[in-house]
Image (tube, rainbow, N blue to C red; front, side, top):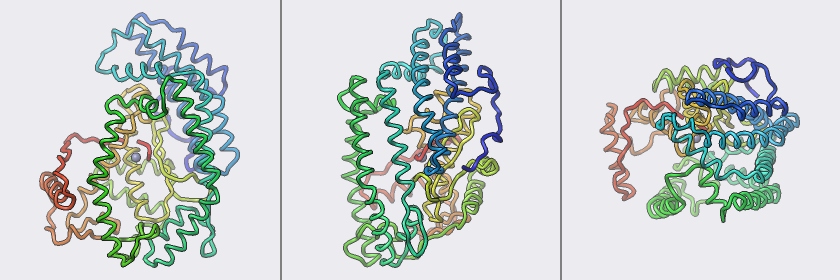
Length: 478
Ligand SMILES: [Zn+2]
């Protein structure tokens, strides 16, 4: 793994936990929970102090788990890292879940809660009421199995490689060839990668089947007919329902799918192939050579720093800081779990970004996106929120807002004429050619986007967000 944990700065000194404590020592851990459980409150101030202490314990435990998770995903074929992660999942996490569930009940039952400012705490109250309503001790064991299945999935997929052109390559590295203008190369490499995936077909299907069965049991234990309804509550979706999602699906079918067909048709004409096959979907639609905006991950970082410098120098400084602390693990390699994520190290309140870069244009956007999540972690650092309000506890619906926002802001700073990022070589989209070189103002851009949508998709103009608040948030790739 990239960062050396022992050398990361500790800028938030502990008030409740001993400065040195092994949280994986169950006796010590139980003592800490007992301390919180037995405390009595005479005022709202006592309760707020208790909440801070509880938050400190939750942050330290989450950080312990995050470190082990990051180490495991960075090298899924290292047995020691796997063992360390599974030890936490099997022994510590269940104890923590039971401990925190008891603290949820204690919090909800205390009369001192009435003295807390509603504005600040009503979300926490709702969260804890939901936790208590859903918690079943029988599910702790099942969730442990669920996490272990997810880990075995990562281990299987992380181990997939293909021998091509005399070299052993990861699936992500193979993805580069799908962007090659030569259709034969694309077809050959796609078939090669797929046949490798097929070899683990039964193993992965088994994981999936087991997960479905487990999740159904978890839902039933909590009094639900099905996992969907259970997970809606568990993910704290208080503001929309499954029915709303179905309406959304219908809207996508009606407006977006025809647009996708239109784009596929354009692609098919541009590439002069009929019909389109799976290996025709990642290449440039006009068959132009693939963009290769960087060779090494340090080049990728340096260029993204330049981009952020133009958006907001504070963003650039934060990415530089992460680089100096080695809080980025970007290169694809054998044994590394697929995908990308940003994760907060909750106690020291610093982000860690993980991805599988192979020199593709898409990797640039992934790092810009994950950086958005990382900036969210920085933005939340000094707000004084309890752990339950910070980073990984932010619901996904809002966590994902800051990443597109950060990308949107970069787009807003790009040269309006050719949509060229300051240091990266992007193709010039047709729709921008022949425009004035003067940058569009915010209002102009809003109108332009709405008209464009209306023209090409028959969709009524969508009101664009016109937030002026400097929102520099975000979280996971996720
Ligand atoms: Zn994301």
